[in-house]
Length: 179
Image (tube, rainbow, N blue to C red; front, side, top):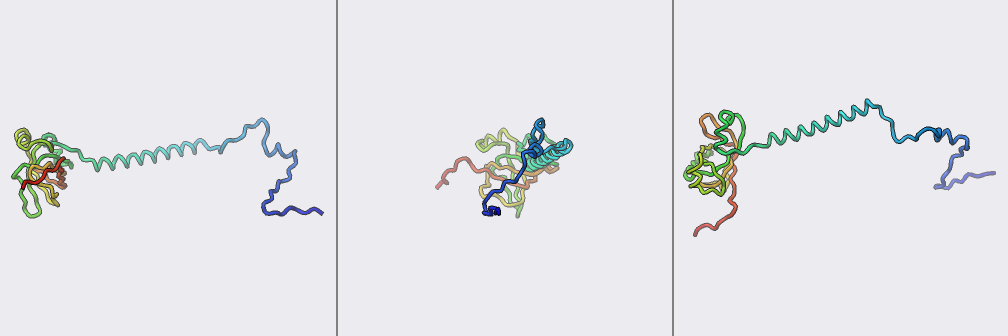
């Protein structure tokens, strides 16, 4: 009487006759398959879906950067825009004109002159244009006369710049206060 080997890890080979092997392996003339065959129409659909997904992601990135990017203008560039300056949000940079700061409750009024941080204020006043700015909101601690500021907002029909944001640039170097 024969007994089967019932060890737990014993490998059992199927009993296949040598005549059945060509049926399992395929004919000798047939090339072995290297993956699944796909329907060409399904492949085209997959490529189109991938391209659409890539375009959608690209559009979202583009639109997000366009809404957050606001062009930085000088005062002459803003004036050159004309009526378009009153319809779009823009950023304008300049130096705060000394003696122009007026506070009225929560409203801050001041003038800026076209110039950069390193430009002496006297030189900026002689060669640059000035613009009135009206701002309501939190004022930066460093905001004072002759500080370079960037205001973001729209130009009103009266010629004043209605600022929604006020940023004061820190000087590149700090000096000790006079005694």
